[in-house]
Image (cartoon, rainbow, N blue to C red; front, side, top):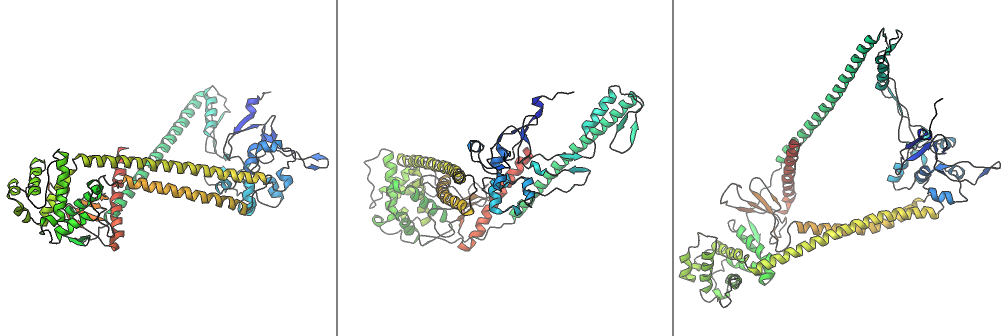
Length: 571
């Protein structure tokens, strides 16, 4: 007689509700009333007596937790504990059918997903008529799938019975034949109902080779099918990406308006770029240059409205030029130089800066600055604007501006760090609130001696925690918004980044100096290949905002699709 060892009778069964596996022991284990498995981890001593006999019902630790929401250690210590059957709320398959109800099957995952601590709480709240087990229909193809046993509803493995003989059985029979089975009555069973008699071991060996060859052929066929499936899937993905790319090409950019107004002044198309360059410079470094509020707009208004020929001592443009020259000269150590708007000293100084600079402007020959203010007065507004922007660029190399940029960059890094810390703190609070909700629900059930909570009681706890969660989400969103703004280069002394670039030389900007809706401007360079592009600027009206956003989104999606295609090819 074969002796079965203890190790052979024990088997670990996965726990449907999560956690560690349970130990089944068919030799010394006792039967759990719920899952009908013999286990060594049964708990519960029911105090109910029937005909002078104590109720023998016990449950394993996982069933009593998943199905009834009770802690095994607490149940073991209770002296007045009553089993679910004696309480009248047992939800095992036998008791459910005895009460005229349908068995539930596995419900622990559904209960936990919907916020309930156990299956018992779910059934009490939602009713048992909504949840019941249904047998599976026998599929075609010769394989019968047995339904999950109702007396084993906590087991996650479903046993299947195959009509065809398994490959393992075939291998064992063939192995016996190869080991010398020469009995004339020996029979090799194939998938067909016919039986082939084997007369000797030689014939058996030939049959073995034939069956193995058939098995190898089937294996190769399965591999080919798998490869074909992968190829078909790749083909479908490429087709979908191609179609998506074709759909994106159809998105057209709305016609922009070449007439742009800033601070009540209509900008000429050839001056728009220089005007925005100057206004963005003043917006970024106005504090470092000690500019008055609205001073930059006054300069532009004077240049473009025909008032630039006023006396130099009263000109805001002249005052701005002198202010920029002073910063440049002081950085060179020339602190004794005094520039006045009443003479030509400031105009001569501009010529000196041009001669020393690496930037060369063909519109301003050196001899022009030696002839005095009469030459300056002959310059039109566009050329005066170019001179002004040249001086702005020269000031960026001074220590005053560099210190300002460094300071702003340090502040930007600190603000980003602060935003990330706030996001991490909010995430920690979110985890704590989730744990708090679970703890409070468990504590409420414990205070009711294991009786599930009513819907109103459950909702009251959830509503209170949700109110705290909303505050945490608000803090997290504010921190994310702050981090997003800083990453887009919105700091004053950080270079303004374009919203999006197009392959056709189109650049979309959102500038601080332009506030009209939609606050998006289009810079058309004509082509990225041009050495000296002739740019054009366009604005849009508020009705065109959805079309612009759709066009920008199509550019991004097109780029993303191209990246995915490249990664697919590399892979």
